[in-house]
Image (cartoon, rainbow, N blue to C red; front, side):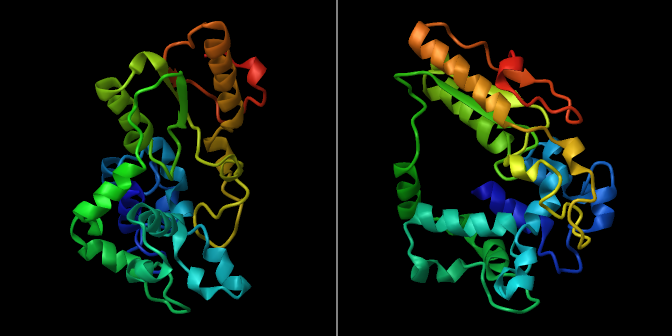
Length: 260
């Protein structure tokens, strides 16, 4: 959740004059160069940069469907709000203090200002206890396989996949865990087809050829599951965790054609 909050603050409100989410910044190599250091520090891999702007403005189109409160809210801000409420045990009334919905206006959603001012992101000792109650120990009685794309622009690889592997190695059962990092793999396959999001926030969806920057994750998840079944049912350990090379211009579409 903290990675999404950091992303919301780094990319800035889409209608802020200083926002990073502009066609010109998207077109640079790497995309959004001014945001690179802060986004990487928050746990996002550079491979995920092409989708940062799209996730910063993901729900903006809803303003044209009679839902102006979604203007500029973005995936980062929305998930930061929802997950914060869940982890803190807050209902809608209690979460109103950091709600990202402020109504039909051109001002940044309330959560941007709240996050910038809140010490330790507003967490208290009680909130930490609540969050820990939802945490995992990393100790396994059965094997676990994790599959994570380095192009995941919502759950950053460094802050999630790599951090979890490190926690398992330090405190859990690493012999029962594998992490496969899929190069150019995103968070949602429907977001990786280059059609459903306005990647450069120029008002036109699908003209950026973004599909050539991402691979579809489902075949890799299915292949990992086949390894898991063999591990559990036949006591054949899955191959060692590794980063999987891919070609984003030629997606693999079947699990059976993959071997890690």
